[in-house]
Image 1 (cartoon, rainbow, N blue to C red):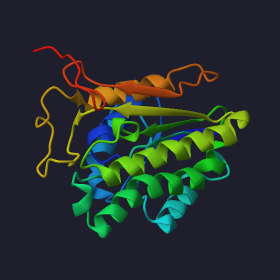
Image 2: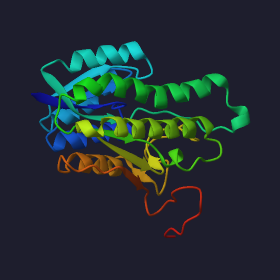
Image 3: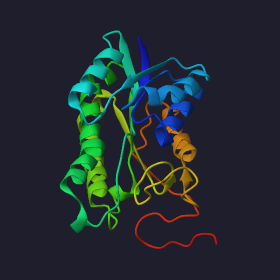
Image 4: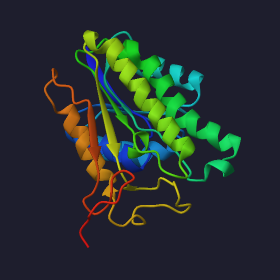
Length: 246
């Protein structure tokens, strides 16, 4: 039975770099983002490394789109060997100033999206031997920061969701790994309205995170790494000041 790895939020940033890293190491891919056009460059880069790539326009917060996407990419004769839950969004704002629609949007993409995709993908994952689910979370899941109420709540909820999934499906061979990076230099907005690579000095790069995720897929099939917390040595992790090189 053939299989692919599904990567959500693959149009740029961490998702794009994960797709490229996995393609380099021999994985065929299904790439999701809200716009199929936005996936074009990622797909071409992955194909350049020999990967077979399918792109689909899927908003992970939309249950119907998720279910339709899974039906079309994982038939009875094709499994999902892996799933990377990477789609995410967030804006930093004091709790007292968070508009209700902004709160709902953060939970819809980060938490509801992870739930929709994971639940819909479980049958296809279980058709593979020792499939791997990687949740790309954030240190905000375990260290809630000021101004990040919606994002921290969504990521903490996603962490809990994936821990429940581990306990329910581990006996069937499903492995789940959580990756919790600190600051990453990408387009992710957060407190930066004009964020783009090069605007977060001293942060991890998207390629750094992708290398860690690719390493998880390279492990022997009986090995499960449950959680990885990573940060650049030039930035802090969590709420407490750390000594970093000057």
